[in-house]
Image (cartoon, rainbow, N blue to C red; front, side, top):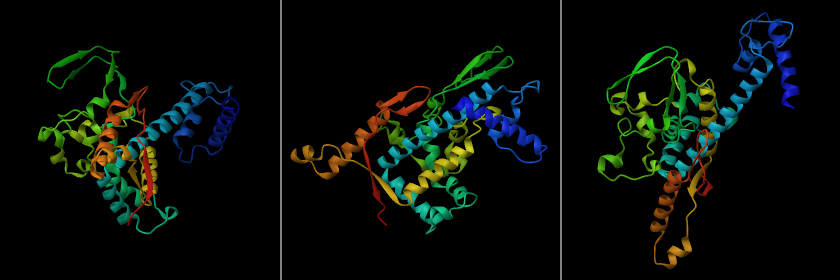
Length: 303
């Protein structure tokens, strides 16, 4: 279907652009159409073929869908693990959105406030701990010199492939101090270091952290879908948590009760297992994803 319909749409889009004489604004999909040699008779230097346009469009759809859905999976699991963060999130939603229905939300005003507040901090903290893409690949165009974390210089010849370990940078204790490390109570699972409030502190109190975070890459090669992904995740999280809360489904309640343990013990064990799943239960493909999903319940908000 794609090989039949999309080429036709490409040609139609190219003709529409030519008819407008280039007088209107274009989006990223239209820019691909314009860059393509949609009319075989027009040989343009540097233009994209239909196959190249199809490949780029497929990549945009795959990259945008897979990374966003994976990040949202981690957002929901982390918020279920940290109910106090849910409470702070819902307080911001009430403050910004009030009694407005989703159809009345304003992308320019409401979503801007949410992304610059606690909801945006939740997204940033989730991407820090569980970046959906484990690494970036870059190639040096010219010979260049870089300095490592220990201050040692390294000369990179031209055409050197460089692998940037984004996942490791997001958890490096030098850039992201945690309460557990400060108190000496270290633990394996990064899920227990989830602290969205760090993103709302002044730069002077955060240290090097914010400068070491670039979940959508940076510079000329940064992700073209950055803003769309942020707005999409913001809208989804706001839509759900304005009406509902997430609660971990308790494990082995009957067994624990029969052994003489109370409710608090069961809740603590459930949190420990969830945190463990968010450490040992991860899968690695072209990115990081939760291989096992600890069960949680979606319940109406308690006002």
